[in-house]
Image (cartoon, rainbow, N blue to C red):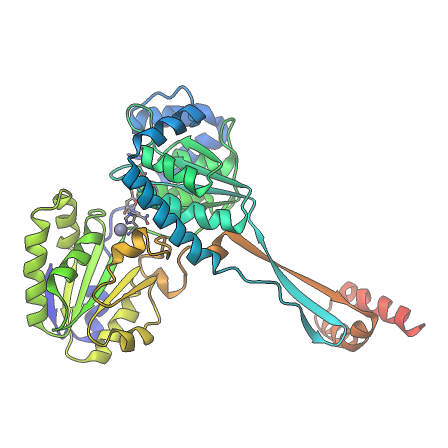
Length: 429
Ligand SMILES: NC(=O)c1ccc[n+]([C@@H]2O[C@H](COP(=O)([O-])OP(=O)(O)OC[C@H]3O[C@@H](n4cnc5c(N)ncnc54)[C@H](O)[C@@H]3O)[C@@H](O)[C@H]2O)c1
Ligand SMILES: N[C@H](CO)Cc1c[nH]c[nH+]1
Ligand SMILES: [Zn+2]
């Protein structure tokens, strides 16, 4: 962790660079696997599942017996926690529903917009280093509220050919319709193209490692839509002399433990604040089970002290963090000036973990600065907005001449005719 005190604004972009990994061969490798899946379907899925996940699967479909077994393996306390989280996620996402509002733009011209669910969605749930069953809730619950008919889930199998029971239990709670034991490129390719066993979907959601992300980007060029460009987890915490150093350190580490490629940034009012928090980070990381991963993430993370409060806000907006925690006395004032962030956590009793699991907001968020242009997953991610319009004779009489003129100016005679023929008919009345 490097500390910088009042670094010049011109140097911020360099200091805040996200960790970069060599991906020169990644896309070619992933494209080759995708091509094979498109050509040979299930046979290729089986081959790569054996190669990368180390298991020869008889069937990649999770059946009823496996769902029942999973249910018996999840303890009651965890089930209750999953239900509490599910309820809050459902409450928050249901409130995002909007009704149909008919608008008469000019007398006789009525326009409206209707939200219609994407019929078939595919959810990828990472399973490599941690069984992220919370992500099942974050994706499947809004899909169900939206009314998606098919909610397909893929997650990598372990060496025994099983998916973690909590992932299966969360899938049941959240209304997933089909589950397949597929990880990485295999999962994304199967859902993008469809195979003998796996249905093709219209949109793929969910995080994953570099293979998953590359596969999502490649299939999104021609074959299927995707939620957003997403990458390794990140958090930016804003602290001052009133912040609790132990709380802030725990927040930084909660994202650092996700992976070596995670990035955590601390923006503080002074070097003294930074030193107190740094000491806490060092003490807390030493006893974490995922110490190694967290330490790797910390090695490319930065601690920045800025005297000027306006500069602190400018830095937040320049970095555009996936998660922003404002743990200062004036957190409300700062929050009003945030224009680039995925999800914001206010005050010292609002840890980022709350949004990861149970407060109700979605944890699938734009990383790598994409928060400048993208929202996190929400109800709208599972909907299309179809526009409708109905025009009366009186309405067409009003707007028809303008349409004719515009079509003529664009040299599109057939467009003009579609109006002219009708106006002639109206003139006969
Ligand atoms: N919910 C979130 O938003 C969230 C939370 C935490 C972590 N993440 C990210 O999710 C990712 C999880 O990664 P993970 O690896 O643990 O699980 P994963 O499920 O994303 O990837 C596992 C799969 O990777 C494939 N794979 C492994 N080695 C390969 C190789 N050499 N070539 C081709 N494919 C290979 C295998 O098919 C395997 O099934 C992390 O990168 C992390 O940053 C996201
Ligand atoms: N913080 C992650 C998104 O960046 C989501 C997550 C899942 N489980 C725990 N955390
Ligand atoms: Zn997390």
